[in-house]
Length: 229
Image (cartoon, rainbow, N blue to C red; front, side, top):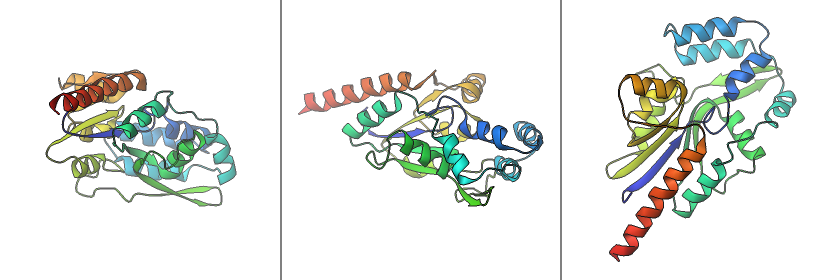
């Protein structure tokens, strides 16, 4: 891996072991409208932005109660080893998520991950109004419109000529972005899509698989550079 490396990770069900946003919506919704919206989104009748806007309208949870819920969530045991490995090689990974920065940053902080790794986070935003959650979508692309947060835009913007892109994800919102990567680790919906389209990818169960790949590739690259000297 002689080229400069860029590593992009989805958050829910990738860095965490389950989809935190989906669980939060189910747990704190006051009605079952979220199920109708989820089904419409899955069938392509509405965009993820429309889906999330509708689902959040049904949620009733104040900030202290939400913080209490988030305090219980752990990241994958291999996420911090990946961050340490990348930091040692001068690589700042990027989180791209259709979830919300407040949720992601709170979970990371609760797991001891602050600013020490140079993590970049591109996601939607969340504001509180009493027990209502108000969404904001600063990275929405009107040109495409499929996803609330255009992950493809972040990958294309940061992966130029001569860069080696690794993408790790699981869902529909990862499909566009992952197709611009050199190496893709996929599970669940993303894996099924890549397999159906016969696009090369590596299936993963958890981040241990990703860690072992990165460790091998980065060590090989370091050894190659040392030999050339």
